[in-house]
Image (cartoon, rainbow, N blue to C red; front, side, top):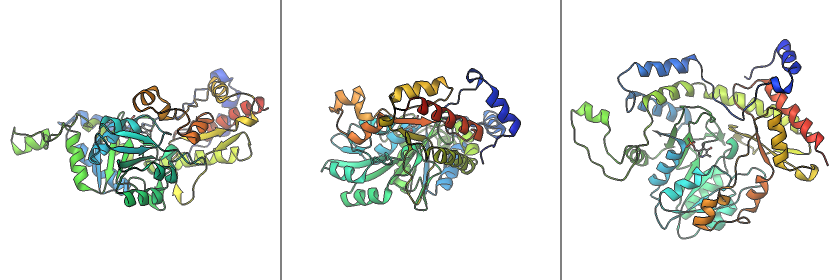
Length: 403
Ligand SMILES: *Cc1c(COP(=O)(O)O)cnc(C)c1O
């Protein structure tokens, strides 16, 4: 449950001038004494990395998501890289990806020498649109990278059906949706490979960190080798066997997650269900407030799923306003509301334009949405008073800038 304000606190906050009110970021971590103690305990132990906490965290994460296997890795970008590697993607292959995401969702395809192909999104949810994916499938297509944008799971029934019909690997970039579910099935089990980030703005954090979940034990084994230089045994296994011999069987990286980080992850994971509830409660407060405001439209919530609300995204109906998104953004920031824009569509980044010839006009729905979107603050430590302050500031700015 999110903290409700006691009346005196509310008065104190409302009497403060704008300058005195704390800046509300769009997201931030929650760390308590349990988390700190868990990290300190590892610092006093024998293993700072490649020790027992890694397997312990992997088992806890697999249990929390209902997946058979969870592979801990150094960050969410490395998780995507390992997933594309596990899917056996290489030069000459095409992978279909959404443009409405952080660049890493497409970069992982380029890391393996393959070509990203951008498919447009559904205008109501900004999630990858299955019909657009289908239209982009060619004989070279090997995989789909879907992103659960803002925390709402994609249409996995349709995406799985497409993947099966065309023999593609389905990768879910679930960096926004840890703790969510689709038709009663938890995020982490919805695609062949599901990737997560443990960056401080995400649902749980290890500072930097990532995880891949899968039901395929062979893929999990290959990803554990990949995160350790492509070497088949790790330092602790060799110590246990009293052996120095090891073999590098494939080109891998040092993408390991430390025991210090895994201990933090184990501690954070326990709080995930309560934090998802906080995020959903804040989202409901926003939904109720904006329902009657024509200039502000939240993204459409699909039925039969649980939205994990990494982000709370609104769309501005610019026809009703006399200023653009940049001005609303600046006014909100000036009012202490740490709004952000997620994301610049990936195909519009200079790297993609230059390397792959992408251009404006390729994904018109994503491009139109990009001009309108704003992410409002949402994180578990926010109070109801914080949410009300965001709402009042939004309504005030929108009213002042009505056409
Ligand atoms: C955060 C994020 C990533 C990257 O995760 P890092 O841990 O920062 O490397 C990838 N994809 C999406 C959709 C993300 O939100």
